[in-house]
Amino acid sequence: MKAIVVLVSGLLLSTTVLAAQPDPENGRKLFSESRCLSCHGTDVFTRTNRKVKNLQQLESRVRSCDANLSTNWFDDQILDVVAYLNQMFYQFDTPATRSTAPPPHTGTASLTSSTRDALQPPLQPLAE
Image 1: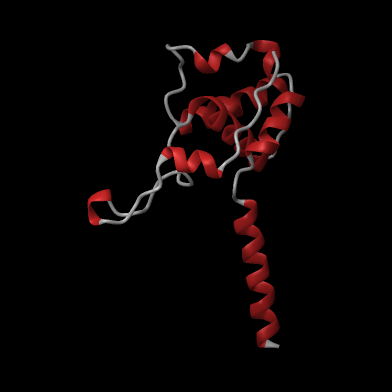
Image 2 (image 1 turned 90 degrees about the vertical axis):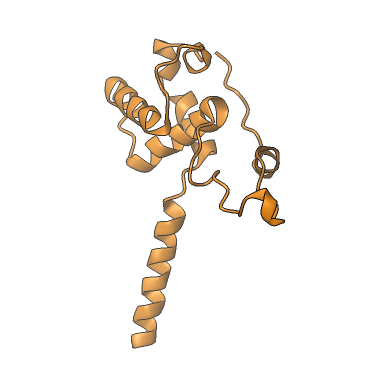
């Protein structure tokens, strides 16, 4: 009985961990299906004087747009859209993209941005 409880607990925890990972591809779909571009084009993401300066501000902005457009996204969907916009336009440092390897002078190679990009296939931009 104890083994079954441990097994079930482990399965529940593993699905929670999997669900916690943002999905940029799902974010792309949600973004394209919503009316995000009805208020602005993609130039708002690439202009030099953009207002969003970090990942927290990006999430706050997506939550604001979610409320304004009444998309009623769940938290995980909001994080998916944030992940898509970050991967496609902003490229702020995230826990998933931070290298935890020792500095290069130790003889251990660290994950470079080009390697990281090679591991993650690029998303296709949306047509305006």
